[in-house]
Length: 344
Ligand code: HEM
Ligand SMILES: *[C@@H]1O[C@H](CO)[C@@H](O)[C@H](O)[C@H]1NC(C)=O
Image (cartoon, rainbow, N blue to C red; front, side, top):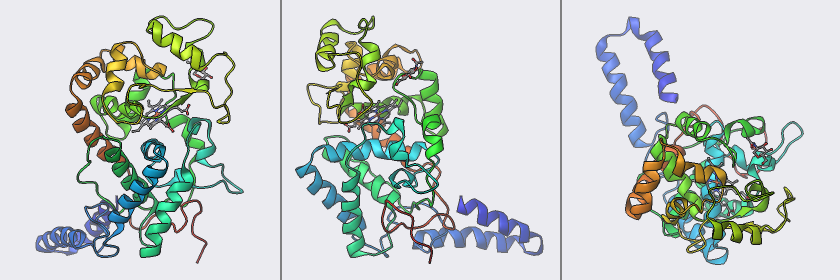
């Protein structure tokens, strides 16, 4: 974004410059970006000079937290999705409510999200080493990357950094932009396409539902008054036992939940796709992936080949994580992920 903007301002000045000057411009900006002088947007090792241990600290913290609360690693994956899907990967998700905005976290679509306080733990560790240097959006993206690996998923190689944090919540866009549990495949694919993630990438990313849980609130429509046609009978019985009444509340204190993958619920593997083929999809949207001609072949291929799933998941996670980053002249490096920095 910044690159585009700065080149257009240069183009405005270009008539008085020679083409040699233009050539100089091209190579100078590329060189500057590589050298870590800003202006290049995201790049590999953005903090290699300003905070050389940033990525190691995130990785250490993700591991420590995982050993205390395994589901923290699960949370980073869902949180990155919810952050990036709304406008930009800009940590707007993490903001607390203010006098003028509701928190994205408080949106109905964020129902069930947990462990936000541990993102603050990771950020605090980074701040101790390099105050005011590493963005919350990078901390979240790196945590999701490291979370995927620690859950037995792929090692995502080549994640760029240099994301900046928004100074505002986009709470009014959450319901529009993040798909719902019962959305059509068309709606889902078009939202992912907006991020540059194709149908295969979308199928791969939904494989994150191989880990974690779903509250009954998001399931009961499939179970009552009768179990949806096309749900495996034994699985339907399991779900009804997990969610024994039709009136599940939209309340996380409602502790009733079910898992997609009962065999390996804490492993980011292709059991999700095997379950879809066996008609044991948990959310309606999950099951639809196995039935839609645009996605079914990818479900089959990922069900058959865990390495292939991992490969596609890693690629799609990178694409999603680089969606629409703020430019160098936008946003800020938030010190506390819950609040924008106080005006200087
Ligand atoms: C069509 C897109 C998606 C929809 C409609 C969707 C919807 C949901 C819903 C309804 C839940 C359960 C919430 C609850 O009841 O507690 C959930 C959980 C989860 N989602 Fe998604 N999701 C989508 C895509 C993704 C993507 C792309 C990722 C990450 C790459 C992801 C990661 C997760 C994880 C890890 C959980 C479990 C969270 C936990 O156990 O705390 N989801 N999702
Ligand atoms: C999807 O589920 C929500 C409740 O989570 C419900 O309000 C909505 O009507 C459902 N949409 C469709 C198309 O069934």
